[in-house]
Length: 258
Image 1 (cartoon, rainbow, N blue to C red):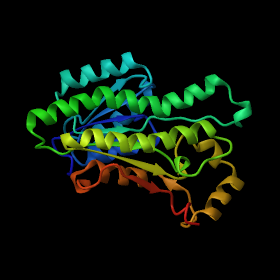
Image 2 (tube, rainbow, N blue to C red):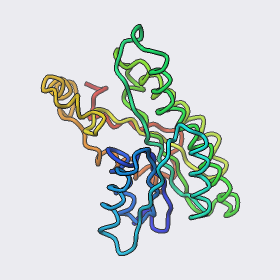
Image 3 (cartoon, rainbow, N blue to C red):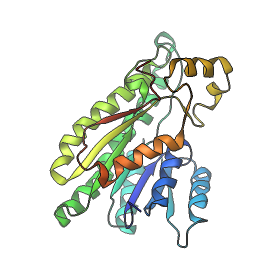
Image 4 (cartoon, rainbow, N blue to C red):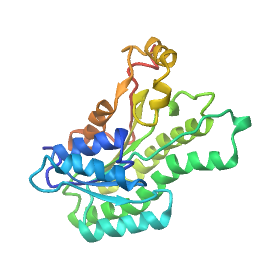
């Protein structure tokens, strides 16, 4: 119960790593706020969490985290309903495939927005709540921000130039945010997953040749699970990682060392 009495907000919480992280934190005592664009998926996650609890531990807030007005409304909701925020997980993301010569400006902007701009907007508005509360309490409670980057932020992919660029930027943004939030006792770190089974990778993982290539080039010789990334996220979000800030944790099954 590392997150007992804590309030945690997770973006992209309707599926994949976001959903797994929300369930993990709720199981450890956190009140979780599930954010995403698809209300039905958020409701499914909330139901899965709440049906096993004596009291509701999950609430939903449908929002487009690339839209500043939506994020401002989200921040107002958190302030009014909870008055505090201990954990912020910036997980929302998405990708498109295509060579740079074939990539439209619209697709480039979409990928940058959903992966990078969302981290900026959510941290700007929700981070203010965390900073104000930390000042008020004189940093008595541990608070943390965890950004979900990617293996692609370390090793560029030829068919995902926009995604590789955005995730590399998330890693460096994490370092800048760590410096900015350190005086308030708020730790900021990122996680870089490798190839993981999620709805976003489902199509590719149905290709046996693609899966075999991943297994062949990964030290652990398998694709990762969303729960395995959630394990690392929950650690970084907890006070057990109190001396870590500005770090990126690569969780790739040994892809880069192979």
